[in-house]
Image 1 (cartoon, rainbow, N blue to C red):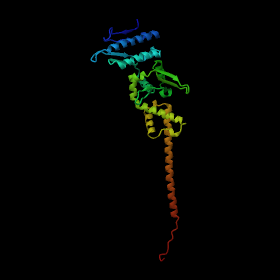
Image 2: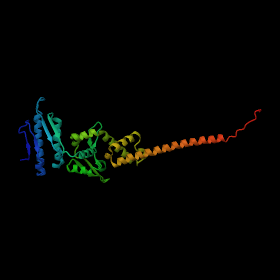
Image 3: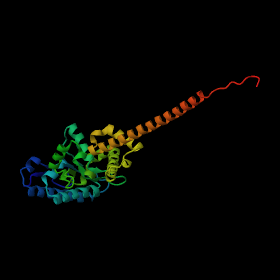
Length: 294
């Protein structure tokens, strides 16, 4: 008998579906896949029954996927996972009486903050469109690569290496995490302004590099002021390359400010010298007093 428990015995009765991880850990991969397919079949039967219910029915199907990240640990075949995930997504989309609740293992507050910093670097914020996954470098995730390694072990992210730069990279394993993981969606909502700004900064940085680091492509004015503000607020989440770009822009602004100040002082000094010369010329004029009778 397969090691998971199906209650209710009849469709529509209250009950719980439980998969025991302790038991699953002792099974081979094919047996686990069979369990997942059987569970998916059971869910489909439930959904088909629920879709026939009248709108005023009090019956609902609530599916809780506890420690949902384990699907990427227990099922290593991407195509098999896709079949299972697609089934869940279809249920969420098409069954009005079906509710899916996914939970992930709770860690310390520090780990949660680190996870947030990592995952928002792996999401391309949509502007009028859906958020999508993106590739991030080890520099962009900062000092959190140990967490990235752990997430890769849990099959939540995929790591690789850029052949041109030899830099390590990471991306989420499936865009379903972005669309349907409530916590990640919440993180993106809370950090959207920062994320959109940082994407713009990356574009500006790339343009500066492509211009052979010409001063004309550095940040200026209000754009630089906003960058300085974000750097002060969230400097730990700004990559070394991005920080260097902002600092170069600040350096150019300071050089230009000093140059303008020197020019201003030079003009003032020039005007002062003209006044001195005029005074000297006037003071050197010989005054001739003519007799009063002339």
